[in-house]
Image 1 (cartoon, rainbow, N blue to C red):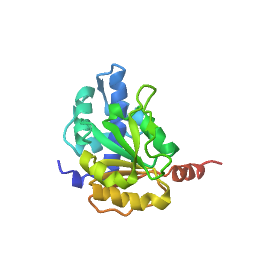
Image 2 (tube, rainbow, N blue to C red):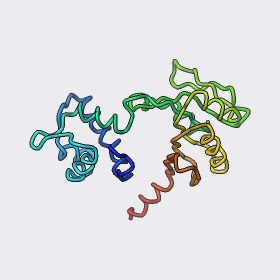
Image 3 (cartoon, helix red, strand yellow):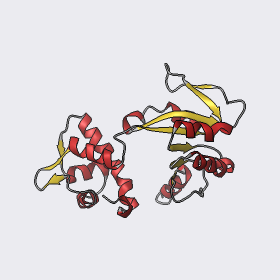
Image 4 (cartoon, rainbow, N blue to C red):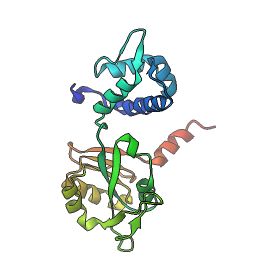
Length: 212
């Protein structure tokens, strides 16, 4: 499989399929059709079949898809059959919420460290849950060293826009290959580093266009 030739729009739909399949599996369902899967995710059956065909054959005409097999294959394609360590930079309310979020573990991700530049926050404990307060907020001055030593390849950037590019440069220097950016700023990074931008205000503005 040559992932370079797969359009990004198709890659972006694969996690949606995987999430729906995992929910079906949790409910005890072992097989599905492109029609049924499409109804659950709001995508046409034809589009689902076209997307999956980019990666080989997953089902048979008339019998549909065996869900455990499809989950296994999609997990390997997305490389989430393994657990990815993640660093969080910027420990405001959003950063704290991300560290405490319990939904990453079963999706292939694990927050392992967090950073901030505020002397009032550095050294403070962050509780992932009521019984786990093992996260200590680290100084961003040590970010490059700590991330490089831990071989972390993914980071979530939750800093103000004014600090985002500088922190992104540090993350690149540390060897991070993927950045989920919550700052309302378009980051400039090498082509080898993948950035996903999340700006809730943009999505809200898209919605209000359709509201009378």
